[in-house]
Image (tube, rainbow, N blue to C red; front, side, top):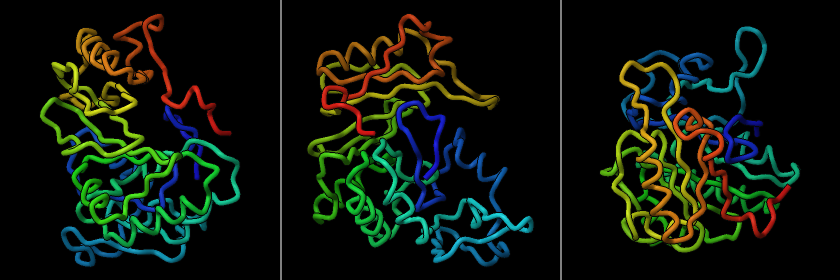
Length: 257
């Protein structure tokens, strides 16, 4: 478990890393390209392969490699219980992967859920670009409905996939990077209790800078359903510090520490 600069959580935890989404703005892929190591030879990994590691792998400098398999989806079994004795905090689970990608075995997801249940002092935030998988897991009665589990869906444009039906209890949306006007209104966010908004970071040539009216539209739609809104610091140049909202849906219950 690692401390993080992500403003809406306390720590990140990556028992699974790697992804087969092909997002042009993906920060995780850029990070792995800098700090990861390719696993074996290119012939060892076929399209949509997944890997498992029981033990960490050391690099030439003797230090453990954070991404020894590069961006190939990998279950790091040795990381499943590394947080069990940590004090309670809000954890973004699998910030370097999509735990609910179509390529991820059900068994991996169940192992991660079991590890979370074994450390109930934490609040767990799960985020995916594949919300249909959440619904499939709910239908299979694999998806836990725990007070400290929050399920999120990533949107970057108004046509992105959303929850096909409402997942019960704690849900949120991460609209990051915001790449166009969402034309949001009542019912646009499917009952989500929390809306996170952020701009694309980095220096990609095609990077889109959101407009203030795009953000205002999302906030107005969130206000209609009393959803909390959290604006990431990347929006300060657009909104101005005085207009930033940094709300948490669990604020009234007290943030676990």
